[in-house]
Image (cartoon, rainbow, N blue to C red; front, side, top):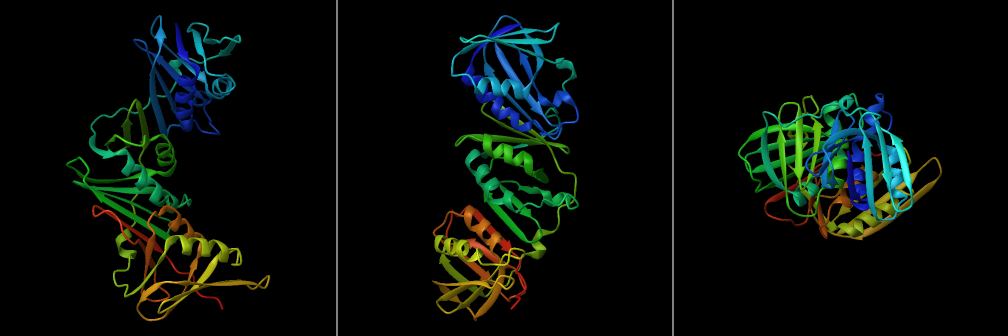
Length: 371
């Protein structure tokens, strides 16, 4: 079979799909793209058996057919070519692929398309429709809080709870927790599942700026469909912890401060913190917030003071600066509220203002003061 396509169009599609190709694959064919030509439409698939990406593009072809094409050499070739029309000639008997450009010909060996793993299909699924923008927001605001501890499998992903027209995304690593809820989705179901971190990272990079994303799911997989792309991921089969139990409900002390001022101050102060604990100490009293850090091993210390609004009794509490900085980075409001109870209980960070149909709660565990 032979087909023609713009080099830029093909590169864009395979770069998107290449995210699903693992770096250390055990099975050689998992390093390939699966090419399928059907009625002048090229479908490109890639998988690592956990996450699969399928995308399609129109081409000019003389017949239908399929072949598996080695990923790295194809990506490298297209990156090295300026934009131009390409002719790709596939010999399905000899399993060869010949690419013809205005500069010359490039021949590479392919693999039998029948040996490529079957990608799960969306059978027996329920589905909801969600704004691509909101889905990207949900991923951005939660994915950083997932755990890397494989012994806590459930916490390595993002927990998604769909409650009819409301959806909640939760991520935690036991030191920090993020809960992001929004309403107004299109669906009529009540369920929950855990999405793996890698799949969400790939999805975040592939999502369009606008439009709708169709999310279908069954007991094993989730299917995200938008434009001419589909991402399929295997759900994490584990029980998610009762996250509501760790969110303190009585937080009488409320600090209101400019997000950017606090973020920049923490970045400077954290330079002087102990590199193991990253501990910074917040002394909050009336309209004054004092931030301190010290590293006794090297006799380093730093102090800054910020203006703020505060309601409550004076509090001195320690936090891991890295965790607070991560949270402030994904917020986009001018002000944030830090809600506290006692120095040994979690602090709650919420945006100063936001849309009525969205709720964001960020929890961070304190670091025991070492002074």
